[in-house]
Image 1 (spheres, each protein chain N blue to C red):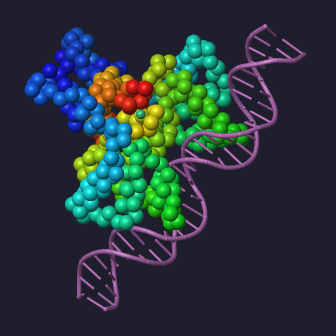
Image 2: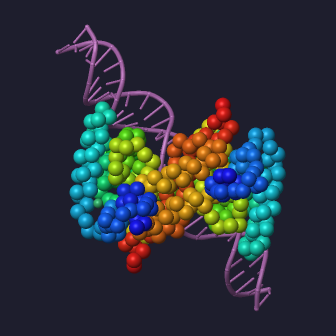
Length: 183
Length: 183
DNA sequence: GTCATAAATGTTATGTTATAACATCTATTC
DNA sequence: GAATAGATGTTATAACATAACATTTATGAC
Ligand SMILES: [Zn+2]
Ligand SMILES: [Zn+2]
Ligand SMILES: [Zn+2]
Ligand SMILES: [Zn+2]
């Protein structure tokens, strides 16, 4: 049967015996409403620790707090939103502090920047160096980060066939997530 | 033979009798150095007139001047750069004027915004409603707008296979243009 | 330990991009 | 020539991001 890889999302030929219901694939990219989101955050923090250890860079207090703040939501967050949350309890951080932490987190593949929104979101498979592809729900603002080989290969091919040597790419798709689409 | 469509850039099977040398395809997307660029601008203005006539919208003086300014270069231009050029000869336009003109031009498919640069560029095939794909040279800042069916289809498929209903997309590729790559 | 160095953070100021809100002008229609 | 919609003018401010330099903190050499 024709199916798709739940990690890459690409359509592939798959023997029937490997069939899995579609819902599981969808939830792999778009979080279920009402899921235990604190688990997403603590999982991300654990991964971040590991990444930083292996890269020999320091996940300092400030950087960790910024990352935790970003992971408070599956929707992307502006730098000044992050700042406001950090300072909600009396701290007096300046914008620079946030931007510097974001630079660090982005450099180390723990956070992505969404250029179409001027906003930041936690990376869902950190460590690997990658420029993700993003599905952005215009209604509920949830963002799914996907990693489609088909997309990156097709984009690379389109570029190179025009004599262009690609070194990075941005793919951001606006639309409706599975939940909002159903309404 | 396997070849590619010089308009869409996609690889296609093409009978040998249709073969054309590659250079012509490359130059279709990336302008030659030293080409008569004033022709690009005047051609774009003529097309813009036609588009506005057929859409029954008005290409006013201000909007035309903004469009002309954008077409002074194949590199994208920031809104405040445009403003500075408009005001270079004593006029006193405010940022709002530029942004409103840009909104109009974008709505009517005459200009694109590059989110990764916060900059604007003239559309090379206006009239058709489309969200182009862009190849951005990190060295000389020239931008090629391409329209690859393969890319848009692959992106759409990756999105829909995840239960997402796409309504718009941004594809921006950073790298080296044919000229800068050669250096 | 302490000294030198590099890394991180603090602090202040400023630069850059974009929009809100309301007033005025101009074209179009009846 | 009034009524209306569309375009522009004007002022102020919001939202996003970086420059420059001072201070603190971690790290390794001695
Ligand atoms: Zn979650
Ligand atoms: Zn949604
Ligand atoms: Zn030209
Ligand atoms: Zn170049």
